Amino acid sequence: MIDLENETPVFAQLVEQIKTAVIDKKLKPGQQLPSIRQLANDLEVNNKTVAKAFKYLERDGVIQTKGYRGTFIHPEALKNSVIDIKELIDSKLISVVKELRASGATDAELRISFQQIVNNEKE
Image 1 (cartoon, rainbow, N blue to C red):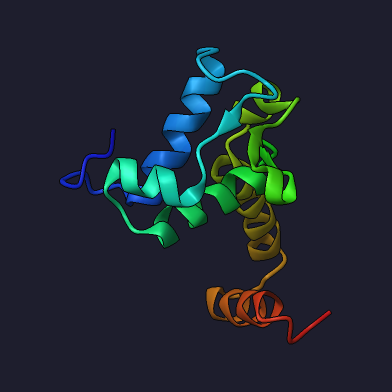
Image 2 (image 1 turned 180 degrees about the vertical axis):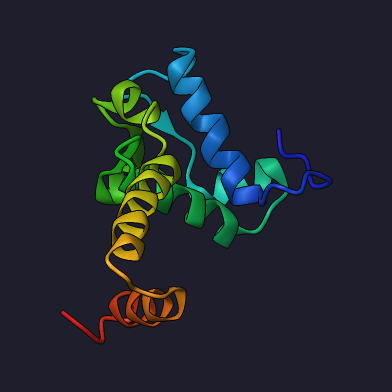
């Protein structure tokens, strides 16, 4: 169920609900999910919203797409559902920022370098 009044984006709600269903063993490894179009129709949301959620879930190893055969719960979905990618990113960035500040880097220098790296301007 999607709560359109919730401040959490719809795609993020969907990602969290699928991960929770995996953790609660309501969705099991190998189980097929509805197509993007079918799930979007069922939830009355845009296809692109469901596609974005599926992209994140596939990135996190919670689902896997098998071409024209469909999308399935990944064999390692349970293990992969408990990893919080945002928490991982935050903890690593906090550590690096503290280290660089201690070395004398300014916030402006950090922002500029970060933006360049994110934009693949530096390698």
